[in-house]
Length: 381
Ligand SMILES: Cc1cc2nc3c(=O)[nH]c(=O)nc-3n(C[C@H](O)[C@H](O)[C@H](O)COP(=O)(O)OP(=O)(O)OC[C@H]3O[C@@H](n4cnc5c(N)ncnc54)[C@H](O)[C@@H]3O)c2cc1C
Image (cartoon, rainbow, N blue to C red; front, side):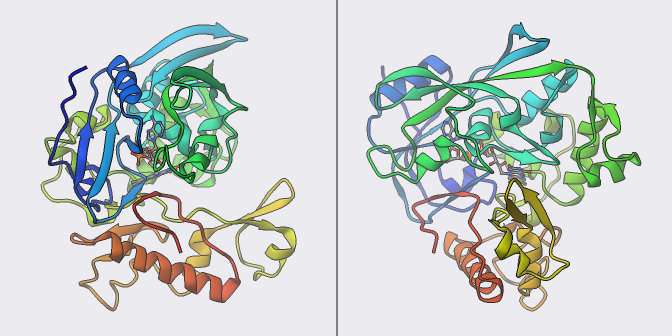
């Protein structure tokens, strides 16, 4: 196969946080077949990129290959135990997939409306929001096994889904020959969803928005509209302005094609979403925290609110813009968990702020915050 690649792509142009250096070889195969053929030729380290909404790359040039997934479609494949099974290729935009499911009256992913990114990354990250996680709807994942050089199926249990993680995400931390990407690359995912135009409201903020009690059974379309509105108010949707660039135009979700694109970027949306995951600690550890600390029991462990810990450690929304209006990186002014690029931040600026927050939370509570985004060429302290 004759391979053509872009020479002038930069992570800063391809990621929502707009940070990161030049990419030596950037490929964008147009079909699943050409993606597979590229994967079988590129045997060394490589990075698979989706929409770049959970990636923080170093400012230094990336000397390996980057392959961006933007191919394929969605098809209904079978009915099984009253559910409709629908296959989506890795390069499908996640929110387009959700929109299709809601339009078809398929229940299970409506609470994940508006999460930026691709289907491939959604299963790697086990995305979650407003009371749902993608792992609840995934039946199996078709992957390319870079070791065996063939496609294979990983079942839901093979995927070892956990909170914002999976077998594939854990493998990202492994060493070469595959790093920074894992042995398994997602080709497509099969979702089995109930054909029911209604679903119960699972999250207090959504219930409040819809003025209905928790558990109230609501139309999928209304849940989707509520989720998009609540996310928008917190600036936890992507900035449509990013799609004005030539390299990003083909990644634009259908929803954004229907609204006017603002002239200038919104710095509160130049983020990776939540920068830290909510820590999960033992019950004994949780008991040492103040009574008003939010605590959610998950089996015999307790999930804490990273946003609460960060605010208690002295970092309010917008930190440090209150005292340094020219700061290059800050917490979002609408969300304490998102680190944002105010326009010219480097990966160093972002990591410096993240390290400062981690250190303060550790000193106050002896709790180690873990970073949610995938780091490329950077190390977590
Ligand atoms: C404003 C905003 C809000 C967000 N809100 C949420 C939220 O509510 N809940 C949530 O869970 N996340 C949220 N996120 C994080 C992000 O949207 C998700 O993690 C998403 O799944 C990332 O998709 P992507 O295609 O942009 O991934 P990328 O950033 O491009 O890649 C992320 C990782 O997945 C790997 N990857 C991508 N495609 C493949 C593939 N085909 N095979 C193997 N590995 C692959 C990459 O190599 C990388 O390691 C938010 C982000 C932003 C910017």
